[in-house]
Amino acid sequence: MYKLSQVTKDYPKGRATVHALRGVNVEIADGEWLSIQGPTGHGKSTLLQLLGGLDRPTSGSLELNGRDLARLGENAMTKVRASQIGFIFQTFNLIPTLSAQENVETALVPLGIKDSARRSRAAEALASVGLSDRARHLPSELSGGQQQRVAIARALVKEPKVLLADEPTGNLDEDTRDEIIGLLEKLWQDNGLTMIMVTHDSTVARRAQRLGTMRNGQLTVKQTVK
Image 1: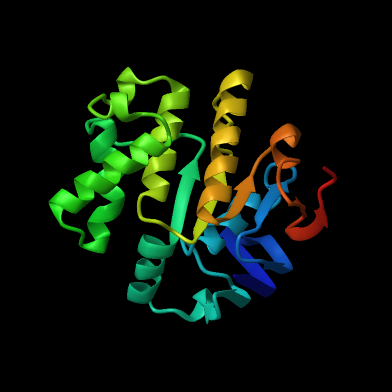
Image 2: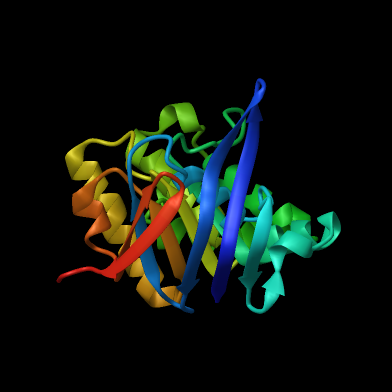
C-alpha cells in the first residue's frame, strides 16, 4: 500500500528552516491499521498530510500502490485524493450551511457522480454510521459525536482505499470517544481499509495493529500488544 523511503519535509520559518520530517522510512500494508503518537510539533500531522497528498516531501519517495506521490502532477494527485483517500479531522470540517446529507454528498462531486446516485450513496453512508434519522439536520443541530459520524460518512462515501484520521476523537468526551473508535474499527474491518490515525490518546492508539511514535521528525514503529 504505502512505502516511504528517506522522506524529508522542510519548512522555511523566517531565516531558519524547520526540519519537520527527517528521513522517514516505513511500509504500511494493505488493510493495516497504524496509529501514530508523539509530542506536539514533532511531525505527526505533517506525515499525515504527505500520506494524503495534501503536501509533497522535500526529498525521498512516497509510494502509494507503486505510484510515487512526490512525482505526480497536480491533476493526477487531485484524482488520487478524490478517489482513493478519505480524511477525518478533529474539528469535523463540516460545511455549516449544508445538511448532513449534503455534507456527505460533497465528497462525491469531484468524482462526477450524478445527482440521484450521489443522494443514494450518501444516504447509505449515513445509515452505515447510524444517522439516517439526522440526514436533514445542519451541523449546529447535531452533537459532537454525531458531527464526527457525518464526517466519517463523508470520508467513506467515495469508497476509498485509505482512511487518514487526525485526532478524530480529540474534541469528544470519553464515552463518545469510545463510541466513535468502535465505529471506526468496525468500518475498518468491514471495508478492508488501510487506516492511519494520529492520536494523543493511548487508549485509542493501542487498538491499532501497529503503533508509530514520532520524535524530532523521525518515526519508529512497533507491534501493539493486545
